Every structure is written in structure tokens, then in C-alpha cells.
Image (tube, rainbow, N blue to C red; front, side, top):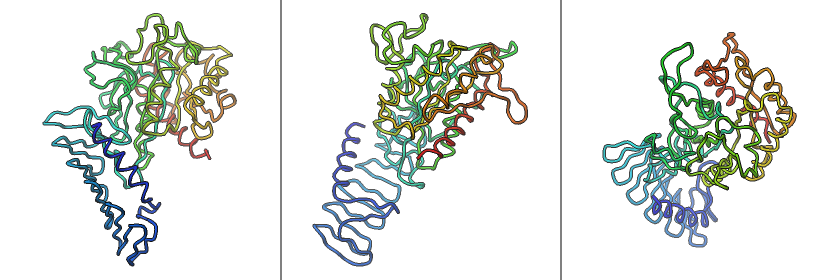
Length: 407
């Protein structure tokens, strides 16, 4: 995989140095005339065929140093990519899964889909039908409700154009993906499995781990073109106050009961939450662009009048550390479940976010249009399955609205 990436980026650098791609998907170079033959500085164009150095383009087919692109099909050595599917020496990646010698593993996508421990596709998970491949990154931060505490449904949210950055080493889960690696979408999006809890009303214990980022990611993928892959970077931790999320934390940065986050930065024997999200986000920026931040936190700070100001301090520091333009990267916070005891004192603080945070927004936890109440899982704190799915959709709707209003 490293050798193939090196070949691809070397080829890209050489190719871009000699030729530029036009916005309409055509190939343009110095001294090229459609239907004529022109030679300029070693570049020959004849009836749609362009030769630059050792690179030949004919009707959308490009061959250079053993790399051939035909439409959306790319062959590099013995590697073929077609609309997001990759075949390398008998290994095939299509959508979000990899099959090698009859076995299937999670996909590590970089701006699309690729094989875990194999070859990453450069065409993007959805192919190039909607334009050049794009990798849109969203940060999902906060505490337990964002981490994922709702019961996992029988048919969990999933989309083949969603990739997740593994935020913790989870060998006990049977998860082979290491901290900081991209993988296909599966629950939990954030950290490791949290075990089981009784269903509301005294039902049997079933796995938990569903958060708003799951349905948010699917909704964002569905609203985007087929050339866009959605990347989720989850760095949320249960039972944490806003103060523990602020930069500069060097002690008591995690709850007293929690272990350090495996793979994440450690300072004075603890994992600072701010350093954790920054570390993951910078890894994500190597292959994509951060487009927005979703945030759900406040159960540990309910009624604290200083909370909105501290949230602004957190968001401002995060944007500055990552070099993000506030005008182009919306921040969306969510209200707490109104069936819980903290909502009455905390949701009015959440509603202050647009007045305190630049390009800040919030989503309501009020009833659905048909009157359905968005409730908790029976503990007065954490979302129920149906409710957290709806909240994720509301985050997506607000994010799209904010992005449409951005310059």
C-alpha cells in the first residue's frame, strides 16, 4: 500500500507540473487546438489526443509510466479501480468492504474506499460521476450522547460513502483497525463497544453505542454528490464537563473511572480531550477537508451560566489549532432530551450558542411534527434509539442550512 501511494503521488506531482485539468472534465495544455495538430514544448495534440513527455491522453484515456485511466477506471501496475472498486493482486474493494482470498475485512478509505492494509482507491467511494473526488470531514464531539449511548437497532444506519476514523484501539472488540485509521461505517463510531443495557420498560439487555453521528453521516452522504465521501472523526467521552474539553488540561482530564484512550496522546499520565480531537482531526486533514463540527454536551454542566462562554472558548481554540475559517466551518450544538431532568436548566443555555459562537447553531430536541416526543432510553439522560436517529437528521439539516449560507 505504501509503495502504491508513493507511485501515485509521484505520478500526480509530475503530471500536474506539465498539464492542468479544465473544469469541464476535458484536458488542456499549452498550444492545444481541438481538431488540429499542434506541437509546443514537446506537447503534441491531434484530434483529441495529447502527448506530454511520456503521458498520452486519448478521448479520456490516459497512460503514463504504467498508469492508465479510462473514464473512471484506473490501472496502476496490476491495480484496477472502477467507480470506487479496487482490485490488487486478487484483492477486491467495492463500497466499504475488502475481499482478499475469500475473506472480508474493514475498509480504510482515504478520500474514498480502499483495502485495509491494501491499496486505497483514488477515485473516491462514489466514483467521479459528480465531479472530482472530495472527502468531507465532520468532527463529532461532546460527551456520552455524542459518543453513542442509545440501543443499537436491528438495521443500523449505514452508507457506503461514509468512512470513520478509528478513535481508539479496540482489540477486545475484535476490531482490527488501529487508532487513527480510516474504516468503514459500523457501530460504535466513537471509541470501543460499551456493552449492553436493558431496553426501556424493562426489556432485555441489548448492545448500546448508537449516537447522532450515525444518522447524521448517512444524511450528509445522501445530500452530497456521488463523488463525495463523508468522513466522521468522533472524539466524544461520557461523563465529562466542558472544562475537561478545554485546551491546556493536564490533570483530571477524564472521569475518575475512565482509562486513558488507547492510542491517543498522553500528558502527565492522562489523555487531554482537546489534544485527542486535535490529533485525530489533523490526521483527517491529511486526506480531506473539515466541513463542520457537531456537538452534544452539557449533562455535567446543566444550569451553569458560564457554559456558553466556555463552549465558545473550546470552539475558537479548536478552529484556530486546525486552521479553520469560522465562516466556512459551522458549529452545531444539540439540546438535551426533554424527558430528562437536565433539559429544563440546560437547553436555554444551548439556545444561546448562535449569539455566542461565530457561525454557531443549535438543534431542538422538541417533538416531531406528528407530536412524537424525543425521549431517553429510560435513564433520563441518554437518547432512545429512535430519538437519537432523529437528532442526527436534525444535525444534518442544520449543517446543510448553515453551509448554504456560508460564503
